[in-house]
Length: 325
Image 1 (spheres, rainbow, N blue to C red):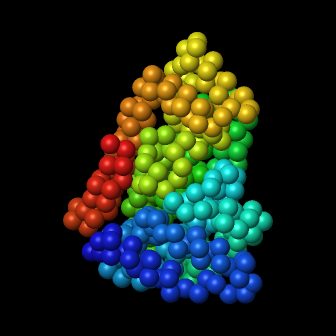
Image 2 (image 1 turned 90 degrees about the vertical axis):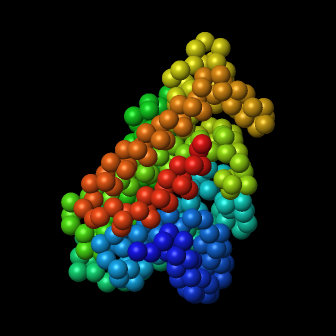
Image 3 (image 1 turned 135 degrees about the vertical axis):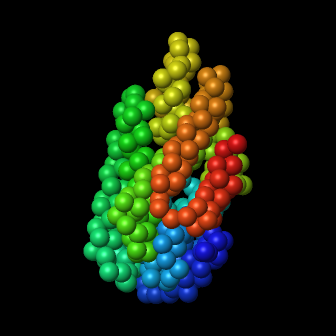
């Protein structure tokens, strides 16, 4: 079995070996740039780890892994424009370093390149793999649209928010695991268990990102703290705060999120003070752990021995869950 670190290094090596820069350079340099920013490479590594659960031959899954990573970074590139984010992994975002028009076009090119990689997948069930990829790509767009719709919607229910992040975030993680499993020769039942494992993992990841935007360390998180508050983004923390807030706190939240021209630092401080009074930090932490625990119930059902699941399980428990403790 391969370790997470081994597979992460393999993915990075493959990305570094690809010639992403050609003419016109203004189109391709931003692609190389965003892919060079690194990160944990969770989605491509999950493709390979899921494949490795059922097969020792992971080479047949490498093109699919790269496709998922490139597609994921394409969504980040466009997300950063929509969210007006200035930092990604502690580096300037593409639209900040170049401009929004360049970022949009380079993102479009990345989505096409992702399809070029997925069509190189060497698998007997290629069309099933492609169907999962296609369905997921469209769902991610649906999730992003819901997210934008929520900008002007007040209030947003917890159920609607969870549906949005399932589409925007969780399905891509779930698809990475399912695609890897299918390429590795998993049964449809086991592939679906891994998909459900990924859905709950993805929900935990997104609420974790919401949490870290308020309570994280910029050096670790890689983004400016409080950006979701500044941009009036609907997050799990805000939704729970609106649900629980009474009188003065509710009025203050409303004023902060629906009144323009409030100074950024004052707004962040005011909203976090309300979160602290309402115990939102603990509520969010508990929700994250709840989804992590539910995810593991599906991983336990996958019909391979526990030793083969150990690396995947250990990575999540020691690296990801600990980020919010």
